[in-house]
Image (cartoon, rainbow, N blue to C red):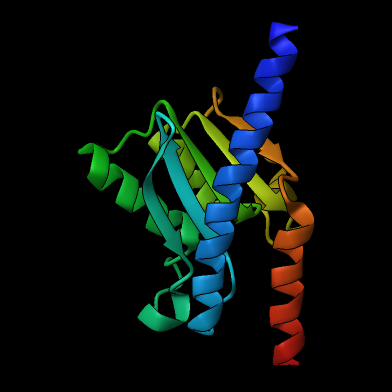
Length: 154
């Protein structure tokens, strides 16, 4: 009974923070960037947030995950994100998965899968061995943002 309540609470927390990542993705959309957003949470509070800035910064590495990792590390005053969870609207790419591995983040929660460029396209063994990965949180909403964005480009 207690375990069920904890799972339910975790699910509610995941949705709450994924909604904040979606808000970040909408900021990217306003800036005509691919709408991906991310937040890093530690101790129940957001310590880093970011959205894609690839076009704005003319930097192929300016992904939402990278922005939020940097912000979180600055907040914590160190490079390791132990005890933290990253919420991101789309499955991380190989580059971002590698950066998350180096940060030793505890958990990654993503919304929509990315079958073309997501880390699972190379087998998925990129993250730190202790990192817990969970996908599909508010996936439909996350996927809709991406589909709408690319429809408008065509």
